[in-house]
Amino acid sequence: MKICFVTFQYPPMIRGGVGTATCRIAKNLINAGVQVHVIAPGNNRVGSQILPSTEEGIVVHRLFPSLGNYLQANPLELKEATEYVISLNDEIKFDLVHGFFIFPSGFVASWAVEAIKCPLVLSIRGNDIELLRFSPVYLGTLKWVLQNATFVTSVTSELLEVAKKIVPLPFSQVIDNAVDVSMFELDALSELSKKQSWRYRLFFQKFKKIKEVSTPMIGTSGIIRHKKGFNHLLEAFKDLLVAYPRAHLLLVGGFTSKYEEAITKQQIKHLKLKKKVTITGPVPHAHVSAWLKEMDIFAFPSLYEGSPNALLEAMGIGLPIVASRIDGIKGVIKDKENGLLVSPGSSEALAQRLEILAKNSQLRQKLATAALKTIEDDFSAERESTIWLDIYYRTLEIYQTSGERHLQ
Image (cartoon, rainbow, N blue to C red; front, side, top):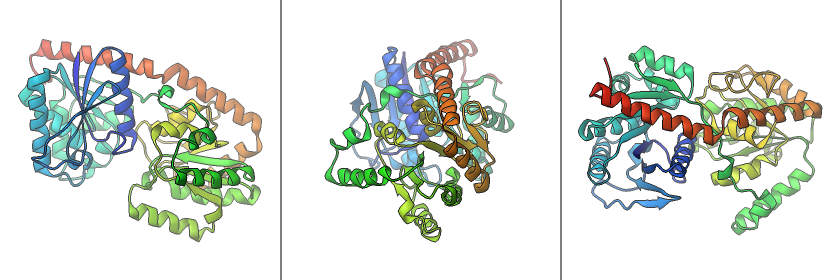
């Protein structure tokens, strides 16, 4: 089988949940004998030569910035990206095209299959429905792309139901994200740092001294932006310091913008937490597990989510977790069974749950063990790739039977 992925993100140029998932799915499909080409955002300009690279068996074509910008996409770049996929198909003869994120990547994929005459699998990932449906500019585009898809998937049932309100979806399925722990470096952070630049080593030495005198180490990971609720976590952590003055907060990830960086650092200064918070900045995805292992408790206070990779990875490492009771999380975390849930936006409730875990080592161990078992039973990468292969074969059958991309 030959599949063309068109994605909104792909590492290492653009970090994020969509990119992490696309890369993981592609790698596991390659291991299953599928030929995968990935059309991803890149720094090329229209008219420049595109030089694909083979990365762990996956052929990656990094095109234009607009593929990764759903708010300011350049129509000319989207046109050229579409024509690139069509031209590539003349050589490869794809069995199907898979668009990750409705716009702009799914939009490009949709125009491409118009010319290629092959089925389209479209994956809803979060903001593509959660935010863009409120735009009078993009709502019509969302509807058109959804109508063109042979098969639609979503990371949550709630997002899929929203899509069905926009347009009927005859063939659709919810597919949770998964965790592929083999993608992580196995070394501890102390060993990993020895292989890095002198700046990284100095940063680690500073953190090591902090870790020696800090308990508990509260942590989280992901791109720092409004939807992740980091401002509520900072407020909750300030409250936790009353009972645990030696606690420290570790944020693993970088900022989505200079604006987010400025307001986050301003809040840290206002709360007088500068010496109590460590922000790593962007780190390679393979290094995330090493940082997670430095944490005693993982906090995930998002305001809204799809199927968060960061949360699943923390569970896969075996961390006790406090997370928001929202779509995309409450289907994974069962309160008091494999984690603790709090109302989104409530720093007071978050602080209370963090304190409960901080004072109860037996509860931490119980929740951590249950979280790891949840990942092993229901969110393994092997299980995920089997599901995707089944969907691809079903999509081909639907397309061949109907003689068109979708049934009215």
